[in-house]
Each structure stands twice: as structure tokens, then as C-alpha cells.
Image (cartoon, rainbow over all chains, first blue to last red):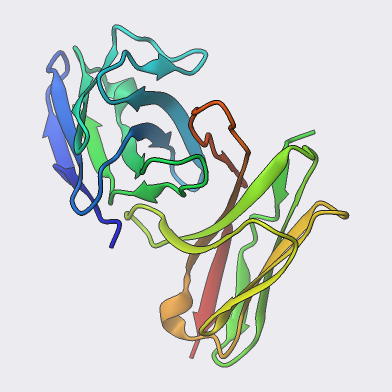
Length: 116
Length: 115
């Protein structure tokens, strides 16, 4: 149980392109979803938290207009990297948690984004 | 001082060895403790999730929490080459008001189990 699917797993695109990443909870209702960024050999850096039907809460230093997050349903959240540039190249990972303050986060398999 | 300290390793052990991975933390508000395993180019996989002090066992894995010392451990018995991965400790405080469990991660320890 507690499977989180993330798509696509790999994206290569030109500078200036907008890229959308999907995160789905397959077998549970995700009241909260999280988006992380991970640099090589580094730990996860939380970018934003989203609750279904609400605006996302962004961490300090994360540009809201650059990283658009939508959590339209209890099983789907999307991260759109707008007008991506080479410095946005990274490993993006989502996680989801069910209802209840004691529920752990379950992670997707990440999306490797490369901007040329 | 970081909220969560974890030795990044790398840690190299022979197959069959007992592995001990550790994290220390400074915030006494942390009440939930997790260990995640992350293979290269994959997302973290939840291994263990504990709330109280003491030990929790699941197969070859044992998680230990000592809240008085602010110290958590993960033990892997009979380690296998397939255990080679990065192990991340994570912790969060209790959110009573319907909030979310924001996780604070350790840096991750890279483990290599060689045949």
C-alpha cells in the first residue's frame, strides 16, 4: 500500500520551455502533498507543501511564479516549472501523506529534469 | 548547528555484517522518527516509522529511538549487497491543529555492502 506515482521520470528540454510534473497517490487519499528538490549527493530540500483545494505554501527562497503547484484532487498534485533555465535542472521528488497528523510521507520515484 | 546531524559516510561493510546508522537531533519537539532508503536516481522508500522511545523491529531492520539523548539509530542485520543505498533519517514534530508533518531530513549516509 501507500504507492505514489510520479511522471515523467525523465525530461530533457530546451531553455524557456515550461515543464509539468505529475504526482499521484494510487491507493490512498493524499490530503497533503510535498515537492522536494534534490541536488547530487545531497539531501532533500523542501520546496512547497500543498493541501487539496488550497494554495500551496512555499518555503523561503522558492519562487512561486517559477514553480507553480496545483493540488486539484485528493490523488493528484502537479508542479510546473515555468520558463525553465539550465539552473532549474535537478531531481524533483514529490511525496504524499494521508489524513491524520501521524501519517508518514510516501515518496514518488522522482523526475530528473535537464534543461539544455 | 543543524537540527539533524547524520554522518554522510560513505560506509563500506562486507556482506553479512551488522550495520549501524545514526542521527542526532537538537529539537526536543521532534516526536516522529523515520528512516528512508534511497537508491540512486530513485525516490526515498519508507523503511521504519517510530513514535516512542525504544526499539522497533521489522525483519532485518531495527529502529531505535532514545529521546532523552536525542539520538536515533537504524540497525541492519545480515547486510546484503542489495542494501547498498543512501539511508536518510527524518523527523517531525507533532502537529495538533490539523497541520502537516513537515519532515526534517538528515544529510543521508551512503552505505556500500560488498560481496
